[in-house]
Length: 132
Image 1 (cartoon, rainbow, N blue to C red):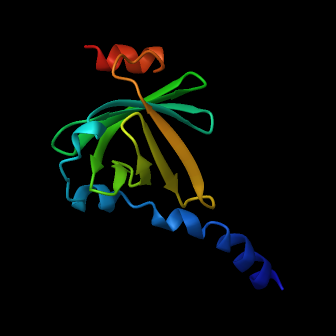
Image 2 (image 1 turned 180 degrees about the horizontal axis):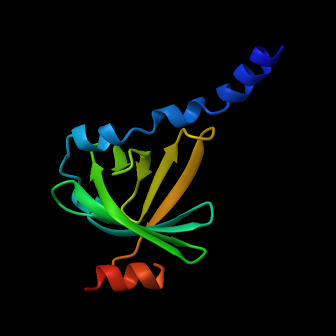
């Protein structure tokens, strides 16, 4: 009985298995279409995220929440944004001013990122970081 309960409980953690830092290291960067280059701001849960996508498929992410500020690298591989932690967001649609993306970690979660080259919607931490 205990094994069955523990197995059921652990099955809920299976979605995290897709997060792999090795994916960032081995990812092949792809030059994005010109409309994707620049700064994008969106919310994922309580986090206010800012992406900087460069013309060579590299970039940075920054997010702020509850007094915590994080900055790291990202790669665009032609269909996904991959954070250096291995977290991935699949780009499902873009129109030049909005990127729609989804993740598969906790069910399928959809996000929207909005073009914001002036960083007006970005957190103060991210504004200061990217305006250096």
